[in-house]
Length: 224
Ligand code: URA
Image (tube, rainbow, N blue to C red; front, side, top):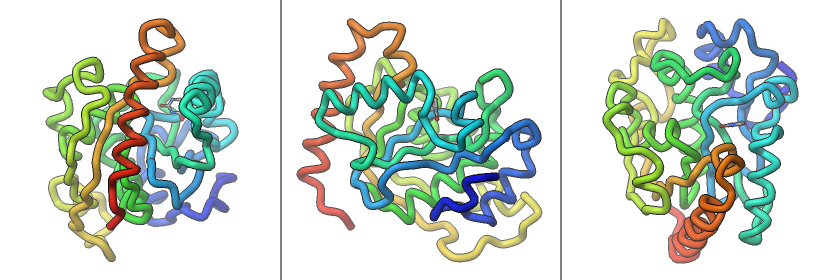
């Protein structure tokens, strides 16, 4: 895995990810990218083909659109951090399975714990439903979709790890530092940049307006 060199590569979490079927067919674990000191964390769904080959998140068509969208609101990748719900590409970009989300998201939560962003922007339905469900994968299906919740600020609390998320059952014994820590942040869901490619006229202004909210919240928010 080429991005073992990434400062946020975590061997413990990588071991959990490596136990999933997804890992067998993937070229790189895509940990995340950007500025770890940023106020804003973007969370997408899963790496695609280009991300799998390079180890870099959002480097394909969706990523190029994300760069344009960021530029339109006066930001760039050095001012955000970006990660995904899954760290490995699902075959043929199929939807993530519940057990994959369960195995891969402890790492994402650890990234949130370490980074302490002022705002988490979930991109599209999967990431949004994960956070709206408070990290309870069994409740993701009953959450509202992105069209209903985009741009709305939600105070979110989520446990960084624990029994409910099945971590203790994974064969690694009791988790160490930070076990059960409650992470608190403001969630602002955004349309996924890939979806915007197919509906630019309607979704680009909504994305830009939602990012205006993000910037306002960041401006008014004191970091813990
Ligand atoms: N789409 C995502 O959700 N994440 C990526 O890294 C690339 C495309």
